[in-house]
Amino acid sequence: MKRHQFLKAAVAVAGALLLSQTAAFAQSWPNKPVRLIVPFPAGGSTDIVARQLAQHLSTALGQQFIVDNRAGAAGNIGTDAVAKAAPDGYTIGLSTSGPLANNKSLYKNMPFDAQKDLSPIALVGEIPMVFVTNPSVKAQNLKEFVALAKANPNDYSVGHPGNGTIGHLTLESFKTSTGTSPQGIPYKGDTPAMTDLLGGSIQAISAPVSTFIPNIQGGKLRGLAVTSKKRFPGLPNVPTALEQGVDLEATVWFAIVGPAGMAKPVIEKLNQEVNRYTNSAEGKAKLAQFGMVEANGGPDLLGKLMNAEAAKWKKVVEAARISLD
Image 1 (cartoon, rainbow, N blue to C red):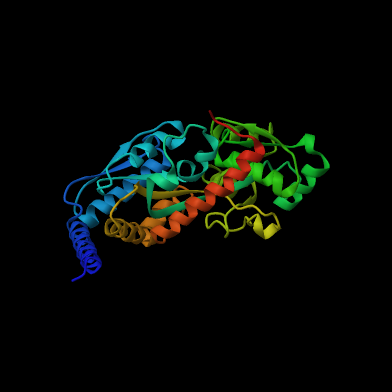
Image 2: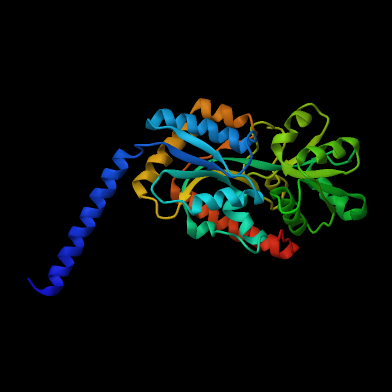
């Protein structure tokens, strides 16, 4: 056998051996508890969803999945802990679109690169943004609000949950796509913004829909538009921005990720079980409690979403000159 033929055969044997070892590892995984890092405080929606998923995965895969809260820096600290963990399948995380896409442009000193340092595993769900007003505002929909804001820009202010949040980025994207310039008012979260909206101190809010569902359903606030591709099931009478001719799509999405270099069979095994949960009647119902619509698909779909969203919001951040450090 010639040298190049020998080398080719040796590489093929080594490759086959590696594949068989990887497959054997995936079949035995997990054989000890798995840590599920949540980069936000205990008790919040991300934490509760993580605990629901952990319970499902523990039952389905026969090992305990333990939730580990690592809050701070808008999700960067906990997601960084996932990125820097050993890629052996025993540390994964439930993170959101902030650390996985948006924060890359908002923070100058990111401790990790989501697109390089993480393994996409599975989408879990998404929460659309909503533009909501006090009923005293003479706009029945987003198109009418745009007309009012163009005619009298100084009379309209739009609250959002804080600088750099998805509500803030959505508002900046709205300004660009509609050519309007309402004043943006940052708050420390959705609830204080909603209090001022109910009191009439501001005219509208751009924020995740979850907090506002009861008041919109009860007629105390008016939903002008949601910013998902399709109408939000919890508010079927509120049209999307796209339906109204406003080029605006924005959601906060939740996903399972792991460190870069995880074995593909382990990723696929996790993906299959997460999808099984989010497609189940129980999973859909529990996610809906947080204003979340289930999402699913393969790891490649999540990877493409992370890339596309990072590029999309980078343009918005740079145009609005937003920086958080």
